[in-house]
Length: 315
Image (cartoon, rainbow, N blue to C red; front, side):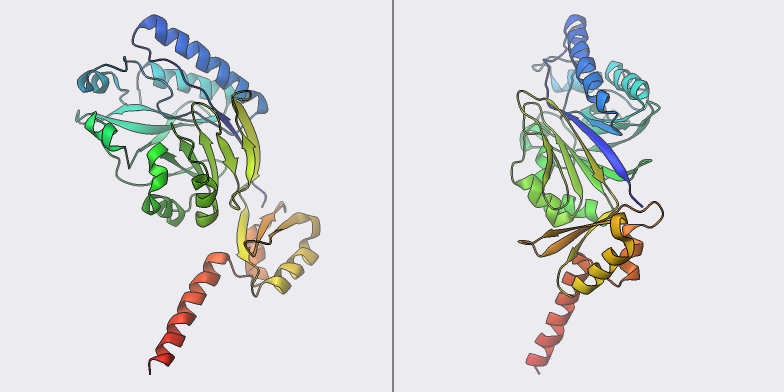
């Protein structure tokens, strides 16, 4: 069943809010950008890594940990995001410092707010940089997948993008959309990850080149210095299948479901990108009906066959 999701991403940064005047100025700026992002009626709005902080950049580790937000109540940053999510009836994913419940320090966390402004949960950056850890950031433990009213989503933060094991964990846990809240842009690593792990990826960075990408690694939207707010719609009820052994099954699927199934061919990668547009039938149900093999299943079958033939050759 088609599940279209609208994603907005903001590329912007503000100065540290080490005093009430600077904090108010930062919040006014972010309020304007969030309100602009909300004009497209998105399901979720993404903000960059440490989008706002309430201490001076030169503050001590102890000061930063002390002023970090203790969830779920939080402080003024949490309350600000809660108010905006509720106002626009949209999820908001934002990275800022979260205080450890046991007073051990602070995390760089991606905090998810639901449409009612409640804290849905938080993902703690699993791979802070060495410099971050030296400056008091506690590493997170694992990938966290959130169930929303439109699908299963996860987050990574900046340096996390470099680590295969984390990205693979998100795939294993069923993430359909991975949100990267970041201080660096990632470049070709972003579409490479989208295709390898076959989920949609949306990024939010401070400057430009925030992107929204589909599982084929195609850019659906990209920010620039002249367009800091981007928006794209994606259909989460989609699946990549290999062309090998699937041509007849995909043709029969299209013949039966006609305009209710989208079949795109990525010729260089030798795959189909199949999306259900049907009001009652999911893409997985279509695939099972016509015995179409997903790319993952095909590659796993190839691995098994290889071992069989290796075994024969060694006898």
